[in-house]
Image (cartoon, rainbow, N blue to C red; front, top):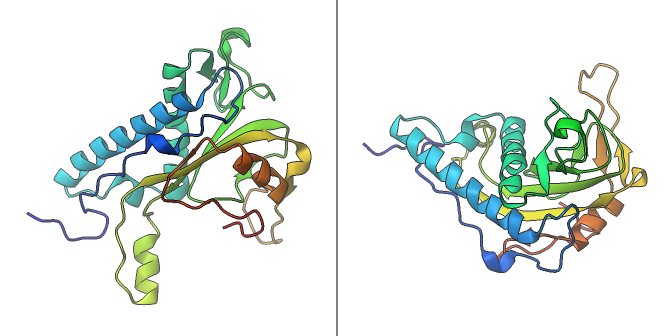
Length: 229
């Protein structure tokens, strides 16, 4: 039977467009834009397969029932295992919760390091700027920016008294650059807050990453540095 509930629509993710690859971008450790693009294609295939299976069981699409932060982590973790399939000069950091996520193959014993500045830190995000990390540090950061429904959409629509709008997942941009300590600022918190203190990428960091964009959906306009989302 047809499924009407929000989040159960059989919406396939939108394919990535090879014309959106920036061949002039610079990525360290042997990673190339083509490797990133192949990883993007892999995630689109994965998510489409998962959601088509879920909808047959009347289960919401993956991006609509996972917590937003959990789904963003899924995007990042997928890239951490997928990029090394196409670029054999890097490997996923084998240290549990190690930093950074991708490290040069053979650089560390057993390809495992608890914390280092040599490698690539990977993040998935619905936000086009203002990305957060636990620490301000010198690191090469790559962010996979996507647009998708989230577990919050239905509740937000109900509060506004409108019907939620279902939309397919799509990758918006992939940005990356070497960031320095001065490209981060710590986010404060109130005395009653239990939120973990985090560091946020400042405009200076965003400008570096946007200038070295790796992939951008051709239908998406780049953000103006003075009008970041």
